[in-house]
Each structure stands twice: as C-alpha cells, then as structure tokens.
Length: 198
Image (tube, rainbow, N blue to C red; front, side):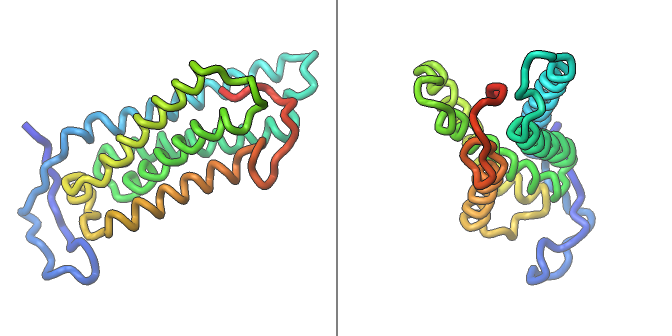
C-alpha cells in the first residue's frame, strides 16, 4: 500500500483556505527509487575522493597531489556529494529542502558529466567515454524531470511552484555551480597537470 503524508498547511501564501489535516497525499512510487539513487551517487563520489585523498597522502612522487587545482576540484566534488546525500535523505521523507537539493544535484551532476570531456585535453577522451557521458546525461535528465511531476510536487508541498521557470532556474544554477567549481574550465581555472577526473 502506498505511503501517505498528511497535509497540515496550505501550499502557498496565496492558496485558498488551509487544507484539512485529515487530507492525505500518496507517496509517488518513484520516490522510493529517486532518493536512494541520489544518495548512492553522492556516496560513490565521496568514497572515491576519500580514496584519492588517501593515495595523495601516501604519495611521495606525485607533485600535483595537493596542487591548487586538485584541492579546488576536491571542494567542488565534496559539495556535490553532500548535496546529493542530504538531498536524497530528506527527499525520501518528503521534505521541501530535500526536493530543492536533489533538483539542484541532478543538473549539477549532468553539467559535470558534460564538462569533464569538454575541459580535458583533446584526445584524452575516447568515443566510449563520450558515450558513457551521454548515457549519464540522459539518465540524470530523466531523474531531474521526474521531480517535476505533479504528484511529486504535491507530496513535498511544492505543487504551487511554476514548473517551467523553476526547472530552468535549477538547471541554470546546476550548470553555474559546475562551471564555477571546474578547476580546468571555470573562472578560477588551473593547469591541467592534476590527477584525472573520476
């Protein structure tokens, strides 16, 4: 049986009278899948960077282990992982903050998947790498669009949002975050002599 969540407040300041606390909203089935996927993506990213960081600590021959580009990349990836994990956990319980964080995470990760091959040196990425980036982009885009289904917005108490404008704003914000925190192509870019992207 689908889980339900009581509505205790109106959806927006301009909404009609406060809805009854006895009114329930069914949890969309997709919210049993999307939040865990976001958590998994963030966890994989976090574990990867912990391993890279540990290798850098023990490296005596790699002069770029703690270069500015490396540290700047680690900052961006850590923020991305944190956004995914916190967003997924709170979205699972229907929190508004969880919806916003997860909806920011997907375009951010999408932009990163596109930026990686674009920002690396020519010839570094093969056709197979481009194919993987395309598949990741498509998958993340589908998950992002799912968050704008009316049933999902109603469950999280955000069904008053203008979906088109909100989607454009979040997609632009995710791309901007990926650009600003890109150590290769962003405004604070460094040299390419750093450990490769994960």
